[in-house]
Image: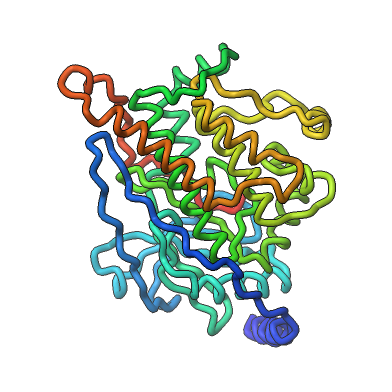
Length: 375
């Protein structure tokens, strides 16, 4: 086994010497971080990044998350670095990984080291790339993913959406439910704007790629540097049942992918969100779905979706790639909607506040496959 590991190291070093250097981002303005608004109008404090130096010998791998992808994830602890017993996620390549997959994983780990923490992306605690096997250590969130949360907490709303195809007006409905949905939409847009600024992409962006903290803050995971995102995309599209419904026309038919492609996927995520976790184009076969997209048939406006939010979806589904709005603009638009809606709701007192939606507790809701690379 030692000889095999040494041979892998030699191949990896050869591959790395011939790898292209990641281009610097050309974006000039750093996207702002919006304050989180609750029904009282207060902004919650942002959490600080936990930066550690963790070695595999200090880590206890407790249980493996479900999934059979090229990257496997473990729930882990470290009595030395986490004396309070706090769990975290250890990611490494699986036994099915080829040499090229190992090289890409090492590049991913090294590039992620330079990505500064942000409230709406899953925090990377440390990496180990000095010796094989390589590891990425990141925070563990036990709130589960956003799609499961929507299905769990809005089951009746989901049924109503499926049964009704009525459209909404351009006026944002002033209820607590939409306040939370727009807050979720803003946090995802904020995370994506930050990733775009740092020249990262999110192939496979969808509602279940958003994890929740115990205070219902959205955090993105499974994002990739621009120069490695093409490899990740090929892995997704080569699956027996790829998530075609979330991809734009240029990716489905031409296998072209860019930051503007993520904008299209974000709009589908918005549709999922305001459809309370429904699956886009549900019931269609792969061929039927491709025909729908080829003929420009966009997803319908969800029953309770504000007109302004659906307008964002339509502009993001423009088949002319350069016409799609950047995430920084989407963030500004959604922030404006949230501010207007929160001003309408925050003055509510007494009995009116009792109509605020009640949610199931988040603790223990994480699913086994929330941290896998599947789409």
